[in-house]
Image (cartoon, rainbow, N blue to C red; front, side):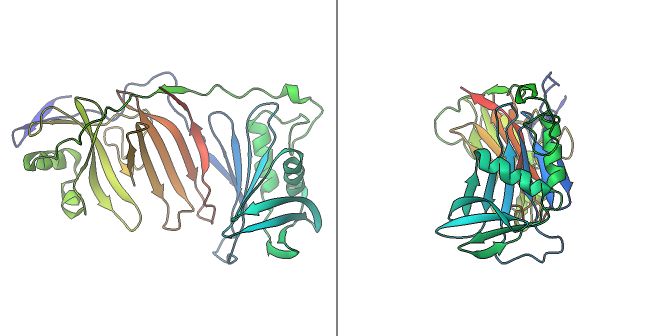
Length: 349
């Protein structure tokens, strides 16, 4: 792309996206079935999560259930239980009045694994009603509506349908018939050099970067100036404030090169559009965070203040662009504070 001169500074225009490559990230999508939602990542690891009733008529201390399972023949489901509670207690899980499983909860968190988790998941899919009790007292009645459909979806995505390893779509085939999990992609991160913080932007540079990003007005209203972070000896990551709401703060990631006072700017490049990106030439992060120890840039957008819906992405700087290493989402704003992982990659040094 060409360059333009603003207040004596050269501002380089470039697209946010690098050229397409063979294995571009494709995070999974979410499916909802009545009071359950489910999603799977690129490794075919699937998570089904319970939702609270529509309309907002929720109990004082609701329980959120999650059923996850890795994608390979030997993997069994795991059931997680989460609620706002303190201390240690034993939870009993009843399906249609019959106790199926128990688990010890510490500060509201519990998990079931192995045969007990499989038995409870199968009973949930087949049952009409569920109760969770502590000390003989009922603490919640999570809805089972849609759980069978969600687990059937899980069976299909993981290639378990028709096998003895399925939770719902069982059949005569042995576990060995289950297809293996896809290989996990690897990303080599660039090490961020130690050193002093990059020099703050000069007044003329602030004017130039505001015009370049289209965020000049928002920058004037921002509580803090652009945030500068060292990427290498010659490159600086700049998070330019570009608007704020009650619980979401947007910023545009820009990379600067050159000497202070005469730095050139370009949009940071991503292999998958982050946050609220408008198009391929204008990346937009939400509630951005930068961790130089891990070369990780985070974007986290809440659908509402409660934080029970939205989406997040984590990227690693590989020396050229930001590469997606994890994505998660929750499309239903119905009390599920655990978001479902839709993409994962392995980071190597």
